[in-house]
Image (cartoon, rainbow, N blue to C red; front, side, top):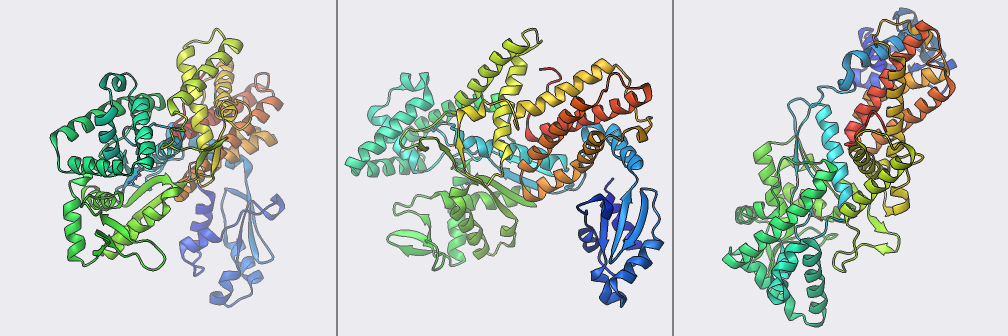
Length: 563
Ligand code: ARG
């Protein structure tokens, strides 16, 4: 139950001349309890009701009756609502008890399809820590949106096409060794790529050769296609190891290559719509004074990243009839996505407004930015494995008899990495720091997971059958009330994460919940309280445990029962 909604409904019934949404947004939560738990300022009504706000507040307050509140009264121009705490406890905890792992979900998105383009790794290039952000944020958004009943299509738009494949093909033909590549595909391919770009600085003709190889690929030359498919196959095998570790999957792997088959159609349509002009041999779309023209076809007639993205957006609209099409991609590509939307707009597609670039800040290394071209990268797989190993050490030290140690170490280690990624507002740049990823204290994944395991342990020790037939008035300690409020907020927090497309909202909330729970069990004797109090507290602990688990699940993080 949402108290603000209840108040809104009451006020709607009183015909106060405001739209229901307007009423909802006008309801405030005052900073201190004396001013009520909710307040409705009446200033906006003065005009239509032709009365002073103070009078309006008085007139309305006496007409409102609800057993959710102990008191509803006018204070100046405000109508203040004072919660009945016992009733509140009952409403919140009963709801969690009834809904369990569905608590906080809704049918909000029913019938609406959202495509999310995330991870979108590049074939033959390392899956480095720069990609983890897109991968982990995208996965969390997918979970949040599905929880709210949207039909979500998870798309890994593989970077499996483009001039860089010309570089790789040419480099492979010159210096490549099949055996070495098979033994350690990404590292060897990266080496070839780096060597080629270095050589090309001295000898620019190499770039022409690379372009020629890409052209061959576009023309479906047999040899080019064969080597390219092999690169793709061995790269995906590597990536899948990482996706398996992360337990992240996709509904579609249609990437740049797949959509390049529609490029001709797109060019034709752009031509018909008179959007194309020639510029220095290339075919471009003018983007106005401020922005560079968008290159649709290069001098040699080959397509570009933006051309393929136009084709892809059209394909997605046709294929999925999306309500929203979301791209989880770093801020570096801001211009690219702005251009994409503008071009679709110029083509007359009103749905360009349903395209959302969910951007995130850059990841850099302590000693400077990463650069694939220079081979300066941290491999994601190494990060994940290190985090798991470190967790194993800690478990050996603190809890060597734990069952399923390996599985739990994996859940904690991976959870720690994901949690750190999802903790900060996504737009923020951040510096990748080993010590921080592997720090398991404070506002971290393991800390939250531990609160969950602790709740589970308490429930096991209590050994009570959990039900909602308890005396809710017995939960009146500050720590208990704080927890119940946080649990009450969960559904709204999830909606806010959806509105902002921002998983960190959930990460923060679950951290608050874990902290409040810590303070609760450090200060309150649960096991040796009176029978009826114990029963009520057991229900509260159960609600906390259920909530933490649900929220971690929305972040793609496991909540082991023991750790
Ligand atoms: N593969 C690209 C990269 O790693 C990201 C692709 C994002 N998606 C898109 N539709 N452009 O930079």
